[in-house]
Image (cartoon, rainbow, N blue to C red):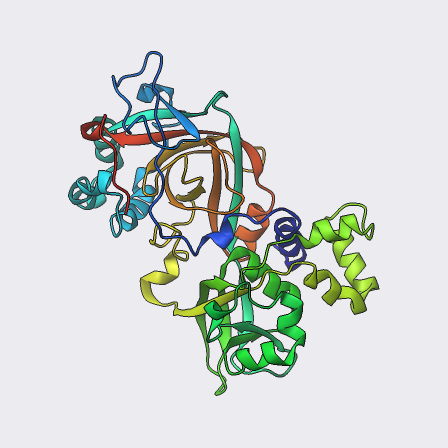
Length: 390
């Protein structure tokens, strides 16, 4: 994939509303749990959750035969995500973790048989609606960066300023970049420096990213910048601002890039139309951590192709989910795990699919917007019992 394709995908994310990616981040508080109301010919007699809890979804018990592609999925690929799930499990699933770890070296037929024996599928539907929903995708950006400014690297990524909580909301994006008092509060707080302010905005939207960073001694290595907080200002889409100002007819990357090229003096005006500013913390990225994404809202590292962001009022964190989406961008029938959330991920049948990191993942993630069906997989031993999410 070339860089222009990547930027097209990235701008598709900028144009839209904030997706789960601001995801990878902030909420680790207990999730409200959904009301489940099975009706029809399901295999279980009672709902797996209490019926007096908040809900955006209706769960309908079904047979495993309803799940598309269940005989074809590579369950061994999903097992890494489940082992990660067991690092901070939903209490409903904690009792299965010993067997999950033991099955990590089993063959896929054994894993599939165990799943069907232990878990009951529930088709997710909107309350008062049907089973069809929307799938989008997100990823972890990766950019070159320097530890100190210079040589064209002059766009900072800041850690949380001291005393952030004393002033709510904190300074806007424009004020952070122009007011002496805001600059003073951030002095010495830069983690790294990028070349392009649009790249910095992408990291702010996605909530985390990988940096191939050059140290002052010339040494290069990977680090991760992870979400640490915001200035408590509202998020505004810069693509929507361009459309509302009549500056572009459609906010695709070719249109936006042409506008930027023709109006370099107004780029800051465009960026400042989004007052929200994200602060980061640095995390090492080495060893086995390189094979996983940033931590999602559940508090475990995301697994490419096996982690999704969901509406936590519909699906509790840590729930195994069967995902089916026929395309057109990518066809998916697979076991995934609800391990993240996001401001724009709302609704009973709604998921944001973690694609991975880098150029190819960014290009693909930016084009995913397609039909979706979901089935929550709940322990048969816990049917009728309300979970206590941690």
